[in-house]
Every structure is written in C-alpha cells, then in structure tokens.
Length: 470
Image (cartoon, rainbow, N blue to C red; front, side):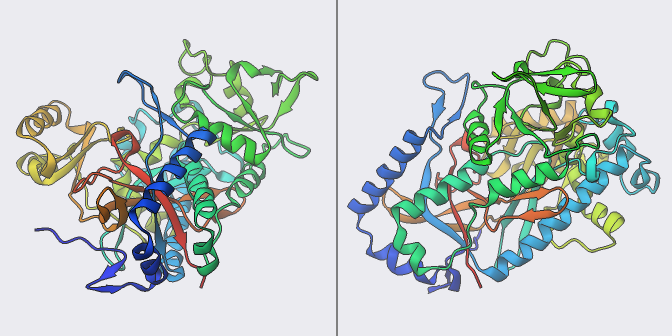
C-alpha cells in the first residue's frame, strides 16, 4: 500500500506549522462545522464566484467546493518555493526570448528544434520581436506537488493565462470573515497585495511609445467564458477597465478604447483569451473576439500584450521536460525545484516503456488542461487503458507519461469529520521590471477519497493557503 506524506502529522505528533490548528479542529462540533460550511457557500454564491462547465446539461455555473481547513507552510518551506519558482520564471522567459530570436538553446543541442519550431503554440508572427523588458510570460502559474517534508516537484508550467487567482484571494477573505480568531492567533502572511502588484507589473512593461502613465485594461472573451468572474474581479480590484474586443480599435500606431468621453489610448492589454482569437487579421480570420490590426501595433511598439503572443510554447508538456536544462543553460544554476520524471511518447524507447506500463502511469496530452485528455493508470478501467494505448500508438508525439506520485495530503472537512485528501498548489509569479510572488497560492484538493485529480472541472475543491511569518 502506498504511504502518503501527511502535512499535518508526523506519526502521532502534529507538525509545527499546524500546531495551532489542532485545538481549533477538535473543538469544532459537527453542527458548527456544517453551519460554517453553509455560510461559506452562501458567501461564494452571493459574491458570484462561480465557474462554468458547458456541454453537460443543467446549470453551467457552479461553485467550486470550498474546504475550510487551511493548508499551512512554514516561512522556511515557503522561502525555498519562492526561490525555486522565481528561478523557473526567469528561465522560461529567457527561453522564450531565445527561441523567437537566435535559438541558441536549439543550436547547442539542448532541446530538439522540432519540439519548438513545429509546436502549434509557436507563433511565427512574433519571430524577431522582443517584448518590453524581455518578458513574454508576465503571470507564471507553476503547479507544484509535495511528496515529503522537503520534496516538492513541478507538475507543469502555465505561461499563458493561468486562472484561479480569484479563489486564492476570496478563500482568504472568507476565512478571515468566518474565523477571525484564527488570524489573531497565527501570524499569517497576507495575499491581498496581489492586485496592486499585478497592476504594477503590467504598468512596468508599457511599450516604447508610451510617454505617460500607462493605461491598462483586461481583455476578456466575455461573460460566457468559464473564468469571466475572475476577469471582472481582477479588473475591479486593480481599478482598470474590463473590455471585450468590440470595445477596442486600432487607429494608426495605437490601440484605443471606446468610452463615453471619446476614444482613450490603451498601452497595456492583459489578455485572457487565446492567441488564435486576439487579431483576426493575423490569426483566425473568423474570430469575433479580437481586435483587427492589434498585432501590427504590438510589433511596432504601440501596445504591450500580457502575456505575449507565443508564450504558450514554454508551457507545452513536452517542452516542460527541458526546463531544468533551460535553468542550467540560461542562468548557469542548478534547478531548485525538480521536475517529475517524464517519458516522451514521441521517443521510441520512451513510448515502448509507456505502452508496457500504462496501468502504473499518468498519461497526459501535450496540450491538454483541466484534467481532460488524461489517464490515471492505477485508477483506470481496462477499457480506458486500452483506449489510451490506441491513442498513443496513433499519435505518440501528442502524449507524455509520468509516474503516479504519492501526492501529500492535508486534513480536509468531509461528511464524517476530518480526513486526509490529496492536494497540489499553484502559486502565481508576476514578471515585469522585477519578479514578485505573494506568499500563498491556490491549493486545490481532490475531495473524493483516494482521488489524485484536483481539477475543479473534475470534482476538486479549493482551500486557503497560509504561509506563516517567521
């Protein structure tokens, strides 16, 4: 039987970061717990913090289940994560500048050119262009898992538009409202500075032609998008306009926003839609979401787009396997955070191993997300295993495989009381003139007993993430 690291307990003893939660947990009667859980759900519903799942029938707007038991890191544990995440964000951005420029890492034979230049996320339209401050990925979401007291692994990198930060902020707000005594008794690092740091980061990468305080906007696909709540939430907290493509237009060398007082020039666009939709003249001509001519203005230094078009090539799951090499190549350092061992099915020997061991592995689509296009071998039926065997055989380059990690568990409130459930973590690293990271992140929890899939679209929940002040 696999043993899992329990983040609260070491044997029968409570680990130091959780020391002050033991009495709180044992003193809370079931009726109070149920009342507080209902209160939290009512708050989430009143605020409007839902996510959308389409194509399944019924009401698509759902609450992500919220678990009231916080996940806790000591200051020392977080300090290591902070260094490792910032190191990774620097290397990923250096890689992006390089592969849209001279491609030194490919010339040096450190990464196959096929993985980069034939990648569907590689945008030829920005080859030779260096964005302001040399930053392609301004918001880097690094998904982490823990397997022991000092063992952390990076599961994947999200360099385009990582979502979920609204839950990081709202989880904290609701916990502070429901359990103020906990925050008086524990010195917990705040996360509420995130919107201000995000705004400062975006303003710091204003384009060359911006000669005044930059105007920042958030570009959303609209209210039918699954993360629309987050787009409007961040715009409100940052004090910037939330716009759709129809609200913006190109004239001459600049992008303008339609307002009741006439056109207003826009300098920085934090876009929350995919590359393919941002400019119908450059990408998909049938896109109704983008701004015709936007890419011409972008390439001429009239507007900044965050994250930059083309950033997605760095979070491809096959490219992921080379991030430790990027750190060594660009930074001359050893990786602080390890990758999960990964087999690339596009390599003949790797593919043979994967096909022979499907029942023991986790298989992912190279461009998959949200827990879809994924096989968790130990939990899969024989039919599911055979279906993936056929898919991999037909298109091996589209898949990678990883061992089934013994994800750590944290105490979680369930119907019968408190029980361990598997978790991961997504911190949000902001990259502009400087690299900043708020002490916390989005902890996702697999609420189903024994499940390792934490994605909200697959039934996972969320909980507050504490970093204790030293």
